[in-house]
Each structure stands twice: as structure tokens, then as C-alpha cells.
Image (cartoon, rainbow, N blue to C red):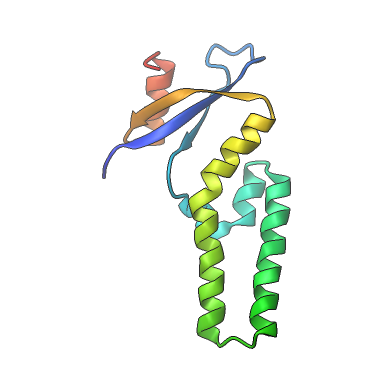
Length: 124
């Protein structure tokens, strides 16, 4: 297992010494791929969750209207799920930026726990 890159985001108004840091991994998000809208709700991204549900309904509707075989329906659904996994962490960063949460930098670490430890120890 290689090293991952995590971006560090903090609230500018926080009184906590670590700024209530939020670390987000770069790259593919397996939880977003598997759970989609539930992942978005877990992270407080209500609008994103609604859009993902609407897109899922549209994909299902298109496959029904086009009378696609099960393989075609599966391909469309997996394509949507793959898009969610690929862009989920970027969507999360965008939502945080809209909430005035500042991106402070990046940390390379093997696991999230190691990245958090490095941030708290002042490596960034």
C-alpha cells in the first residue's frame, strides 16, 4: 500500500488549536462509489445527495425508456457510481470552500490516522 495525499481544511473562525481540521483524501472514494447519496448525507452535503438521487432516477428512467437489456442498465448504473467515486472528494472540497472552510495544505501519509497525527504535530 502506497502513500496517500490528504488535503487539510480548517475553519478560519475556530477557537480550537487545530482549527477543527478536516482531512480529505485525494483520489477515488470507495464509500461514495458504494453508497452514493448516503455518503453525501453523511458529510452534510444535502444538495449533492438530492442531485445524486435525481441522477439515479434519470439513469433508471433512460434505461427503461430505451428498453436496454440488463447489461445496458448495469453499465449505466456503474458509470454513474464510478463518476460518484471519482469526483466525490472534489465535491466535498467544493462544498467546504462554499462554507468558508479554508484549504491549508496537503499531507502525505499512509493512513488518515497518520495524516492527522502529522498535522497535529505541526508538520504542515
